Image (cartoon, rainbow, N blue to C red; front, side):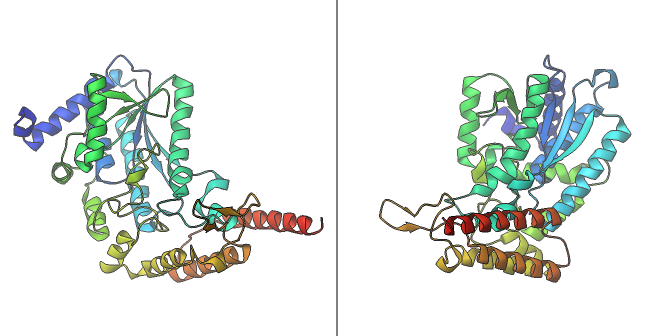
Length: 374
């Protein structure tokens, strides 16, 4: 048994605060800190630790910029997005009131890379385990672009993540491998050159995370009570901040129970069903739409015979690989989405996305007519 195993949770928490303080005051003070904030328990605890550490540092020594960066995939579960909005608003107000060098940022996919533009506009088939195009477009690219912009400006950036060894055996092995290579709290990111990862709560168990959140008020004001309720209603965990395809397995698996309400990678949306079971029946139309989207994915009547490159494609066994959703299918999906919006009583697709979708359809139809006249 190690000394760390003998520590109380309070002692571990004090050590984490001291670790964050020491790292903040290290020689690389010109490099900004980018805190990946999903609004879930782990990223909330990291943000909490950063706030508390800054409070204990004299104002004259708070020279390093800190960016609390959350990502909106634009198809987030509405209840989760509402929690994220409330949390980041409180963090922004708390940071300003305390005079902390903290800015709050929300990243989003590029207009031509949103879920609906790709699926309804270009006809991408609904994501699944073999073709999970959503993670890269909606999560990795927006946040990675923000980090790269800061690296270009400051030559480097330090990314704080709520990653913990207790989350999975594979994650624990990956973290331990890095520790064997370098004796530092910072590890270089695999794909983001100039970015270093700092994992301040890496050794905490899930029970310890909840114990700390439950026994301390949020330093930006209020408590973490709403976070506890969100997890109770959703029956579990969140899709974490994802910065590379190596980390993508955390998104769209049985370990992630709330995230995008459109997620067709998982067999069953446990979070929305959890919200419904807890009395929030307004989410039923969303579950019904998502399930229908799963059901039509491999229906040949909804898919084009040729790929977007104009070719017929077969796998190694000679099985035909269908192309994108047909334009007729895309029109049906959009209409059903509008019907779902009406039943739900809230916006699920923006007018800008609808306009771009219609432009994509018009372009494709014009090309089809041109080819037919050749």
